[in-house]
Length: 353
Image (cartoon, rainbow, N blue to C red; front, side, top):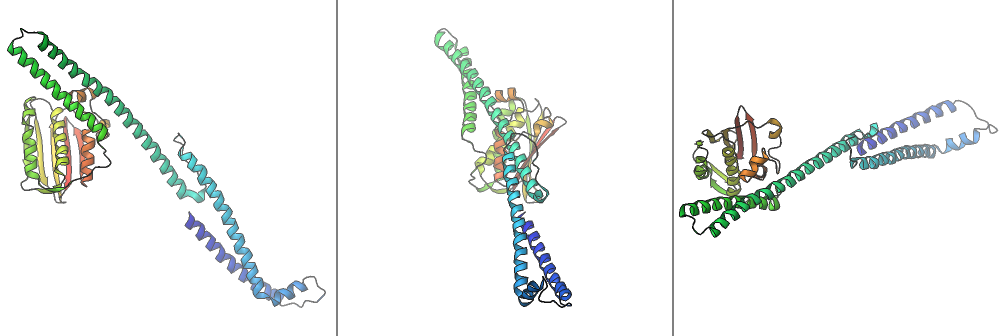
């Protein structure tokens, strides 16, 4: 806007200068053709102007330039008033667009963009806060359930002196399983309170990524037995990456764990790891399970979002897993994407080499 005003002011100054010079020569040629007598009304003016041509031209130009500057100064003040009023409209709690004068078209577009982004950020913040509040309610309930169960079985073990060894072992195993669930839920609470997704610090080091993937997959074998699942893996050998191994392990762990949790029983999970022509390593994970609706896919990487709240609470998931995974991948200058159709969900992670 400032450049436009400067440009217009400069153009008007040039045009005004040309007009004054043209008029000076016209008046000089026209008035110079006649003879003035001392008793005529215009004679003193003509005589003075004729003897002070340079001063007359300078005075006329100065007054003209001053007038042009004054006009544009007043116009600028008017624009500033418009902008100040528009700034108040930015923070108005409505979605009405801001309208400024034609000269402020660029500013108008920019301010509407700021207002839209502000409203959108407020909406996202409200939704995130609501999900967080809902999540705390879920987790508080989930903490109480296994704790109540543990206390119940421990009371039986304490009060029933004639309980058989078989039942004692059975009840202790149940208490142990419930305690593990409590540990998972408590870890999720720690994630909520301490994990800053916008400020992830990486501790990178060279890693044999092929070996790392094989190790991670191997550790999931006990979990696969619960649903009689099978992992079909194809891992390209000797892939070397410089990454933060602990954080990337968390990403892969979360993706495979999600695939297991949402797979049909007696089905296969496909994992493919290879290098592409764009100097990226692709980690592809696919599982057979319920199709994730498109409206939920749009939010799946947001904090505290859970595809199925009731199911998430059973697995101890706080809905931070994929949000954290995306932040870690992006911090590595990588990409993460998901698609789900025809009862097949596919997750793709791309990490730069």
